[in-house]
Amino acid sequence: MLSARAASLKPSATLAITAKEKTLRAQGLDIVGFGAGEPDFDTPMHIKKAAINAILDGFTKYTPVGGIEPLKDAIIDKFKRDSDLEFKREEVVVTVGGKHALYNLFQAIFQPGDEVIVPSPFWVSYPPMIELAGAKPVIVETFEEEEYQLTGDMLEKVITPKTKGIILNYPSNPVGSIFYLENLEKIGKIAVERGIYLISDEIYDKITYDGYTHTSIASLGHPIREMTIITHAVSKTYSMTGWRIGYAAGPKEIIQALTNIQSQSTSNPTSIAQVAAEAALTGPQDFVQTMVAAFLKRRDYLVSGLKQIEGVTCFNPKGAFYVFPCFKNVIGRSYKGRKVNNITEFTGILLEDFHVAVVPGIEFGKEGYLRLSFATSMENIEKGLGRIQKAVAALD
Image (tube, rainbow, N blue to C red):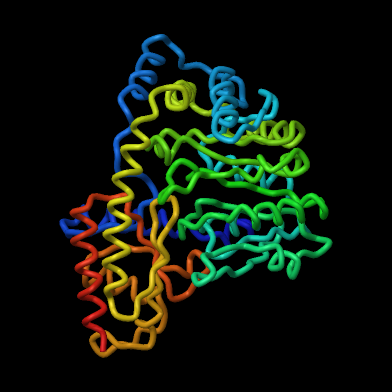
């Protein structure tokens, strides 16, 4: 018999959609997939060569649980270069992907009775991981017309003596929103005054548009830095999702707790992948600019096309590689005599009859919305957008 904890746990919605998409494609169906949360670019060659050389050099044994020193130094240099933040090696831990950093962090700082504020729309794994730590997610809805900003006033309304953490993801998945500096400052001030941890998920910090430059909340003064734990990974920036290298940086005692938890579960991240991650952070960065330029063209085309569908609105993302259009107008209409009761039913119609895979917004805490990843070719975007337009037109 399963534990109650395991029995109540659902699989990640985004991974489930991607798996179903691949299954249908293997059956010979022409599926256009907008579900994947990973760049469609190959890992740069200099990174792959670093891994190959590590294998040839026999770097295939255990490493320190929290990561090799050259990689930690590269991470420290990245934070100094990008955010003028200074960390020591004992304030950095290397993990098996960014999700692993978050999971270990939640296990380290949350416990039963704690409350954790999660702005909605949210990444699908935040609430389950908080619950796995025994804490309670407190969902705070943000809105498209307000550019999905989380404000100090919003926080003040939901903070209680049980509040232990606030999740910040910027640029965000699924919306691509960012935080205005004034809101970051207010959030940081509240966290310091109330003794609340800030979990700053900055995995999309290099994938930004329209002149936006990422500002880490940890860079807004020493008191805020002391309440902040940054989680990150090489996955998105360097198209290394399968390599599974993430990291966290923050107060020494918290990082040590993450390392201790890791020592009793996965032990060290893969030695070869750590060498590759070091090469990613220290090597040429022109690949990133090339990738972001391609994403920008796709974003503009997709947002423009979605807005041409009657009744659809779409926030123009400032970062990441997702759009989160509002399709509330399809709910209550009919398809082939069957009423569309919610957005999940509409995504089923899209997949089964129009062969387009998208993720329903309710999985991110927002009914009536869809998440589409534009980390796919322009050809797929054009084809998929056309099919979505036909699906909406087919509704009565």
